Amino acid sequence: MREIQHLDPLPRHVAIIMDGNGRWAQQRRRPRLFGHKAGADSVREAVETARKIGIRHLTLYAFSTENWQRPSLEVKGLMGLLKNYLQSELDTMKENGIRLECFGQKDRLPDDVRNMLDSVIAATKDSSQLCLNLCLSYGSRAEMIRAVQEISRKCAEGELKSEDIDDQLFSDHLYSTGQPDPDLLIRTSGEQRLSNFLLWQLSYAELYFTEIPWPEFRRDQFLAALEEYAGRQRRFGKTGAQTETANS
Image (cartoon, rainbow, N blue to C red; front, side, top):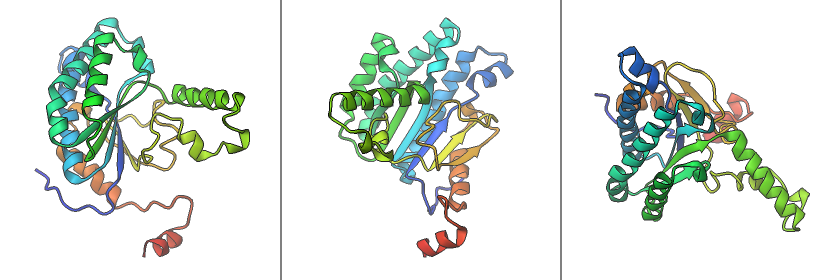
């Protein structure tokens, strides 16, 4: 087992596209929901690892706006797994200082799932060790349209002027308001695309793609991604020399 060691720099915010549950199950001649259940164990391990190592924000792409198009039986099963996860992890979240937030269209979730989600969010609101963001019925384009609509309404009502609109104001109208943008994006299972995930927030994130499917992405694999991140130089449009001078 890989040892947890000091990593410098350590990302403040890691975002993960948890891909490959269904394909992993199908390769084993099992139902797709079997893969999603196995993936829930990877979620627990990722959250535990992030909290122990000192990452302050972890965002997980759990269910996209496009995922509603999947077979109804699979969607129902996913919603049941989500509710069970929230119920089973509440005490652990409170004991370990984990605050739960939700990015996405909560109103589209089944009533019992939404009620459980709201309950856990309320119960963990004062926790401060790790902010766990679950993206549920989430799509980045829908998020940005929602922000534009809200800003437009404020302009029409005289609360804002068009010249007030800048990067920060726009960010303040996204689900992620008040949180730093992700430093690192991890996507599992070999796909190399963003899939309508945090398109605004990931502008300068480091991207890490792995062939490992999400049910097999555990503590050691997470640490390997963090080690690679620590070895990269983030320039944000500057030259390498400028970055080295600024960091010296």
